[in-house]
Image 1: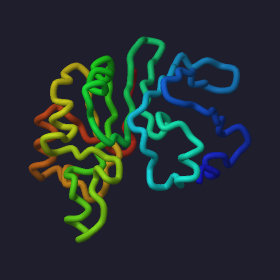
Image 2 (image 1 turned 180 degrees about the vertical axis):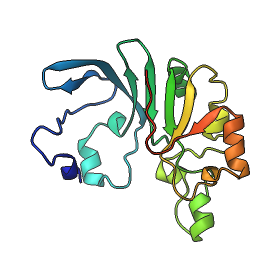
Image 3 (image 1 turned 60 degrees about the horizontal axis):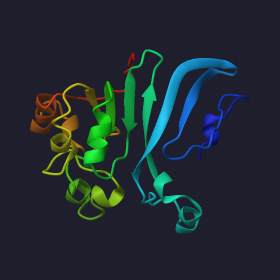
Image 4 (image 1 turned 60 degrees about the vertical axis):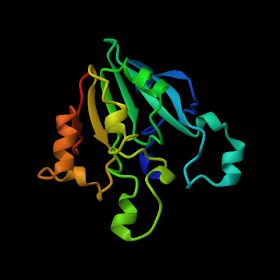
Length: 186
């Protein structure tokens, strides 16, 4: 699956990582970028594309990782494109971030069922919905300092419609919705 990332020699450098590990992100071979990444567990359940046999060989805490990336300036970016639930520990961890790139895959838990007439819920697929009492918009509402950006949106997500009430609700709550080509300075 990842062979496309390695089309020319030295294009990719693979490093095995696990939960609660910190490691530098190299700029190029032999040069320090000044960027450090620390991983943290978001779930002990592996995604459906990981076979039960393979999951049995791996550590449960490595099933789904988030990343906190720190620049040499001390600024921190939290990256979590797939989050199954928002608990108090995660909220506390995010209070330390300057920028959050957070799972915005689905607006509601039954979004795909409503569109397709059947299927899995967002939570069954490992994504906390944006809306609802336990959705990320409400659970992360107390985070005032970090810039908050939803990423990894499914094309069925109604918050992508800039003229819709879902988009207005997200923006009123202080969130942004990522667009292709955005870059961030830390």
